[in-house]
Amino acid sequence: MKNILITGGAGFIGSNIALKLLDKGLRVTVLDNLSPQIHGENPEISSPLYKSIFDKVNFIKGTVTSKEDWASAIKGQDAIIHLAAETGTGQSMYEIQKYIDVNIGGTGLMLDILANNDHHIKKVIVASSRAIYGEGRYECPDHGIVYPTERRDQEMAEGDFSCKCPVCNKTVSLLPTTEDSKIHPTSVYGITKQNQEQMVLTVCKSLKIAAVAYRYQNVYGPGQSLSNPYTGILSIFSTRIKNGNPINIFEDGQETRDFVFIEDVVQATLLGLENEKADGQVYNVGTGCATDVITVANTLSKFYNLEIPVQISGNYRLGDIRHNFADIGKIKSELGFEPQWDFDKGIKAFTDWVNEQEIPEDKYELSIEEMKNKGLYK
Image (cartoon, rainbow, N blue to C red; front, side):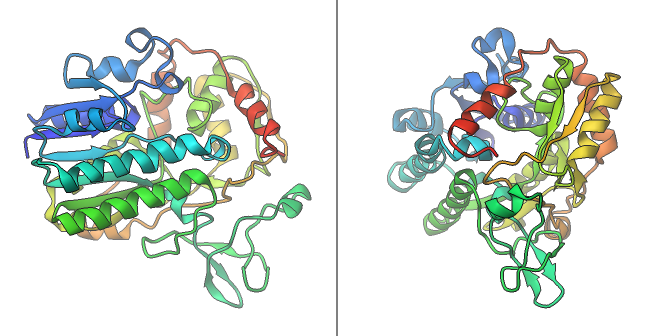
């Protein structure tokens, strides 16, 4: 496979994959709409992501919601890495049509072309998400492995943010989430990623096109958009700290995520592109380690050498999960994936990069106001 199409290829993950493929001597086409939410109003000036691939790839400014753009982009390609999507669990709960149109509708258009048009596509890789697991996998002292449903508004309002057994309502203990864990997303974003994954694996199998789905955890690293106030906690916190604004930590600050460095994500993705063992499979991509939000805020402040007030407010967003970290045993054993970046090493590389950037206006409070107005922020 010499010709690779990356949708969303000017984004954070996509641009890094594109550069690695170019290093391998492959020809890369990028389909991207250069969303202002990610790239700013003038991407040619304000977006380091777009500038990193400018004049290096065959760039098509277009959208996955256009069948014509899809048809143009797919022509002559051997494989598709489908990353284009609206992201952000909170925003997805009120910009519902937009998320469905782009994430599900855009994927549907791609598959419709593969099913009905002439093409040379041999493999499709689709970006799924840890969001499809919802609250993830836990253990109840009485009922063993359980999958908690979304947390109750009333309990969180009273300061109880823990996950409960769906059978007896006892507090449960966190376990790493395996690929065969229950799929039960708690946000529209998670639902759309589940649909993307299922559509690609189902349709491609019927068309005898190899397909791989990656359930990425919380991806971070140099180049991540600092202007998007809806997703990416490390970038959101960094922009606030650099603007001299306080950090409002939701819930009790003990909520955790699996932060995986961009270079490890690129490595995992290319393993699936190159290895036939991955065909028809789904893989978690993470580190297998959980890091709490208080640690994130304090570590960023330390590396920026800035004393910013950190408030643990007890606020919460409906649709947010409490914890989730990946079991990465499958991708290790089947594809030989080994994360090379732990959180301390990765956060140092990220903050060194941020320190060299022109910091955009902090629009986080505007995103919170939107959620308050929709009754999703408490």
